[in-house]
Image (cartoon, rainbow, N blue to C red; front, side, top):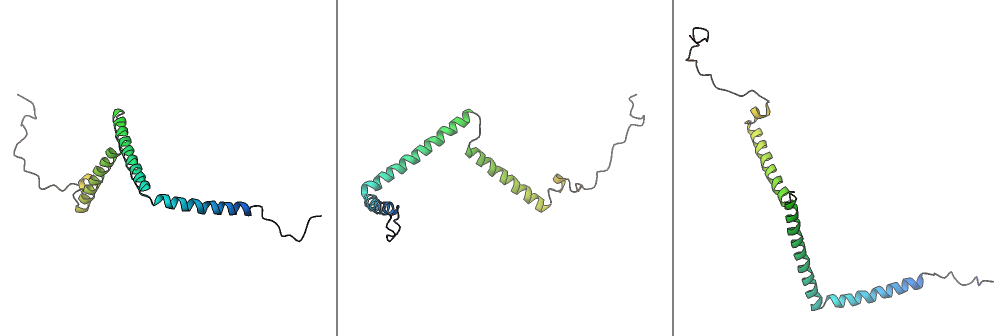
Length: 128
């Protein structure tokens, strides 16, 4: 017969205890490592390497897109800026009322027409 007075044994208790102990040891070790000058130097070199790789990749992709005659990110950004400037100019013209003829919303305001000084030929436009 099984002993019914013993409480249920948690099968994962030993695993949790081991995991907690291991985590504390690793945290202690990495805190010591990250506090050294060597780690700071390594991290600086790694960041420099990463930035150089990113710059070189950007230049390579720019050359690749140029060879395919495709726009780069910078080209699209410049185009967006130009488009934004044009939209702002059109909006300013609309606010000032100067674009009424462009939008076709009103007839152009023209001053008085000049008087006609030339007379049509008397023979009905036929040469003699």
